[in-house]
Length: 245
Length: 308
Ligand SMILES: Nc1ncnc2c1ncn2[C@@H]1O[C@H](COP(=O)(O)OP(=O)(O)OP(=O)(O)O)[C@@H](O)[C@H]1O
Ligand SMILES: [Mg+2]
Image 1 (tube, protein in one colour):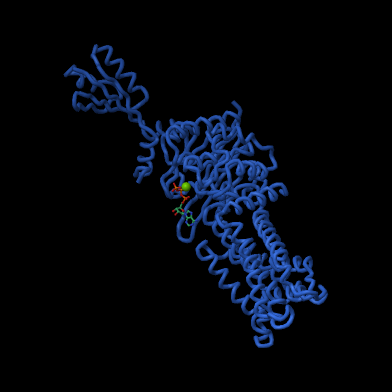
Image 2 (cartoon, rainbow over the protein chains, first blue to last red; image 1 turned 45 degrees about the vertical axis):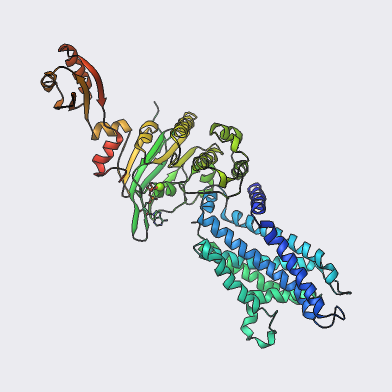
């Protein structure tokens, strides 16, 4: 079945790239957004790179990374529900393909796009990093992939239960964006009620932020475990609830 | 002839959607190497029945076995050995025709058929590089048939196979289906075109409102349910009408616009009329037989036309 998975993944990449705005929307836009944020940050702290707004140094990459992840998940939700509504899922199911192969192919496509976006973002943003700050690019990428994987499973759960394509994306946005706002990036965690720090995105932010600023992985085992649990729970639920048509 | 082996066995199958009973107590068998057709009007339960057999839907009750497999438990093993064209399906909008064939070929463990040859046979060779969304309805249909044949399946399921095709393409597809049968495969199809069923199927089951009403060869159904037939002829002989009344099997004779319509029943009616024509030396300028069709059988069995 590996052959089927690889070929399906490759075709899904090609199909996605042929979409108008496919590549631009998912790769170019986030990178531009990042550059814009970074410039803004520098303008706000004219005398140096480190001082006035550490917000922009520390948080911009994290914010953009999470935005990429959310963007990815929303487009996954959209694709699954469009495929379901259009009868594409049904046609694929009338073959020996396993359901998980189909879903894995989509996850692989999305992770690949995330990785490319991230790489471009880091390249484009290198000159905005503060001098002396050496972001752990590889660790950060791994952290982002874990995060994306985990949030993708939330997306699957949403795609499993929301009946129509028209609703799927708004529902996804309504679930994900508030979580993003409350994740501790914009409002300090101390001000928020403690249960909010158990939102899946809060763990994601804590992990990404920590890794970006140079924490060792051992300081974030809890975050990773929480993200894995989110993944396991959402995957199990969507396996139960998934509808092909 | 050896006794045919059933490849599909369905017994007591029932499927409901909330309060709608889509299929109720349906039982039938499809034998190795035959073309079996399920015919019935819209909403009769054809697609539901077929998709239960393919393992795409789970019946509420009843037993189904296909190629000795349980379509529910052994769905992947089964999918590997069958090919399907679904009534309502799409592909990715921007997938190219050859990419779809290439992908499908990779999904099966069986050795794939020659995809390019299939495209050629189905008249899609010049559309190899076209996006799915740019194909016409009939071309999409033909692509789906090609995909159904890519794994050289043992049983082929075709749900409304010629819907949306022009008469030319329809004939090509019929030829192709007969060809599949010649290669020893079994074909299970649905249609609401009586002509299609009559020309293509070895046996048909008539389904209406979720139940199978009768099942036989098309000729057998016509013979049993609509034995009556008529002869229409044109003659200048004013007294011809009376002479036919005495012919065995004739029930009535009607004259309209210089044409005589002789109604009767039984296989021998036509022969008896011809014998009468030659014995009585009646000169005819036109002669036509009107035989009942599956359409008439359907009307008789269900009390409504299939188009209603
Ligand atoms: N997914 C579904 N949900 C609810 N009802 C359904 C569903 N699929 C079919 N039905 C109902 O079941 C009945 C049988 O439908 P089915 O699609 O099997 O008919 P069909 O014989 O294939 O008709 P057609 O010739 O229009 O394709 C119909 O009354 C239909 O409304
Ligand atoms: Mg149907």
